[in-house]
Image 1: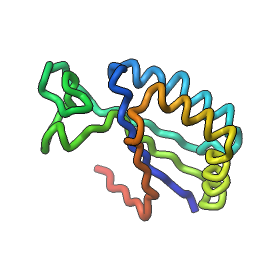
Image 2 (image 1 turned 90 degrees about the horizontal axis):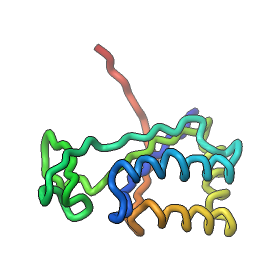
Image 3 (image 1 turned 90 degrees about the vertical axis):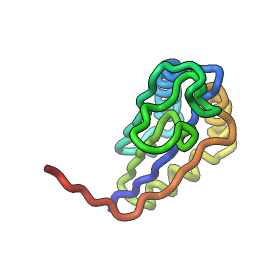
Length: 135
């Protein structure tokens, strides 16, 4: 049975949202693929929050680039990206998880993450059941 994890990212404040996206797509993902090989997720979907340019209207993480809110406050969403990663099964995920915490790999990933993520803000959660309803 597929095993899915959602990870929530806040960009390094020194980057614009576009720079964050470019770094994640073109530097972090290739690094992970190179380090993890077959343990890289079978599906790695990235979602980027829509943002508007409005100086001083965002929360602390994005004062000039608040999310395009439909409900709630910009302070409710200090995030810039959401990753949905899926593996074949929990056993494969456990191998991935072990691999990313091995000393050499962990150091390389931590160094890379410091370049584009706000330190200490990444969150991750395992997805339980999922349902889908179409039109």
